[in-house]
Length: 86
Image (tube, rainbow, N blue to C red):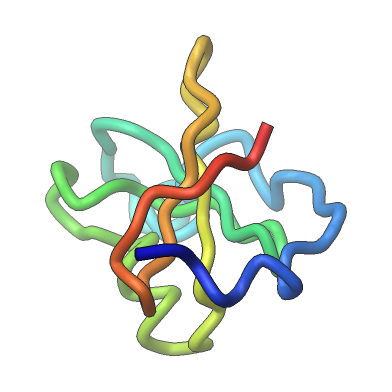
């Protein structure tokens, strides 16, 4: 299966230096993900609050990528497939 949403990727910059919502609430995260449509930075599903996934459900922006050092993979929530976003 392949992602059918690659055309929705934009040139974006991270919206924060950590998970936006966790920073506001004084919480922590495990790993960070960035929305490739708007640049929102949220925490991964291994984190307590799962803000990256919540961002997808709120906005329907389909593709995010890891912004962890040394990682260059992305994920399409709609097609449930890993995408190459290098």
